[in-house]
Amino acid sequence: MSDYDVERTKYKPKQIRYLFIAESQPPAANVDSSRQFYRTSRVYPEDRLFINTIRALYPEAMDISQTDLEAQKAIWLKRFQDDGFYMIEALETSLAHEVTKAQRQEYIRAALPRLIARVSELAQPKTKLILIKSNVFDVAAEPLKKAGFTVLNTELLDYPGRFNQRAYREKLAKFIQS
Image (cartoon, rainbow, N blue to C red):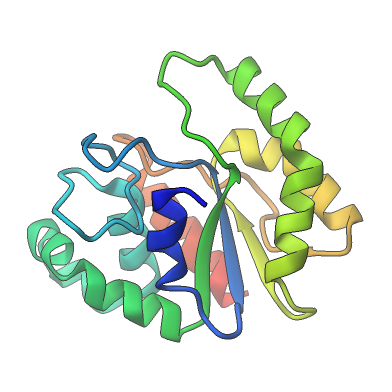
């Protein structure tokens, strides 16, 4: 189990209502990254996945500054957990930014059997899946549906990078309300 998996497990709900599946684990804890979702040991500037997910799920978080949200991260993650939300990644290792989209999709395709097994261990019959990023949606949506899981995405949910944050929040909120 990676150190990130240890951090994630602290916030695992007893019953997972919604299972988010992002692309790949974040880089090491000492690397500033926009995807250090479960790490609370220090503030990660531009932790876009965390900030935008919390703001999409909890409208009152829109009125809280990014700095304050990051400082309150453990509190928000506990609420995320209490509400039955949990996030994993399709790939159990981190990918460098230089990895191409085609390579990323091939890695996800190769990891599908393991991903389906992991989802089977976590999901219950009523658990709903939300796939984050085009690579995950394009490669994993149909195999997960064929494996009997409920995938809420009817369309791509872009990663909340520099230019997709508002669209990410709006689409995610819509998926949860459906």
